[in-house]
Length: 267
Image (cartoon, rainbow, N blue to C red):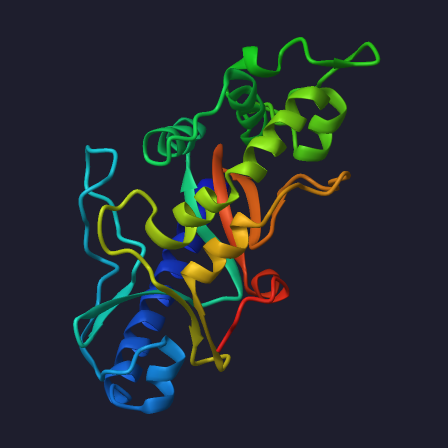
């Protein structure tokens, strides 16, 4: 089995298990639609109605072009208030995955937060650019950076050695736009509708059952000011997870333990 086929099989398995958790949670909510404790956890007072799994839908994109999946896996009504629930089966995992070009385009066109050429170069080097010009001629102490196979990549710690000035600009840009990244990952993606108002960590097999409101994560992200002076490893740590390089793309990841450490109310 090739590495690519193995990745596809693991992705399909994760998708299947994720869909199972969505169906299980929707069934749980229908059973407890009038339960005061469940309503209190969601921050609503009226009983839940019109509960349905929404993750397989496709909605209009903020960027135009092909329809995109919504962030809300389950949608419901409480009176006239719509609730969108993003279901997470595991305590850590992927929030968003896109190319550098798509990532920068979303932040510029949706949030009016553009990236300059230095930041884009650093991001391309971080995910592993197939364009040799991105990493060619990068040297440290006379030693040329070594390409690893077809994709040359500089992890964030390596960038502090090879591209120190540029990585400082990148980290400052990410820090100042942290609430935009949180909005992209947790709430909307590039979808015009089907936004997530809540993250529900739910897995009946492991008794995982924790709710967090997405607006609390956004509010906390606005208070983020700077990264640590020393970053060890290849990933970029975020207050609510991390940015990783995956298949040549930017992967925004979530972490329940990090969200909890922020002091955000969990139920």
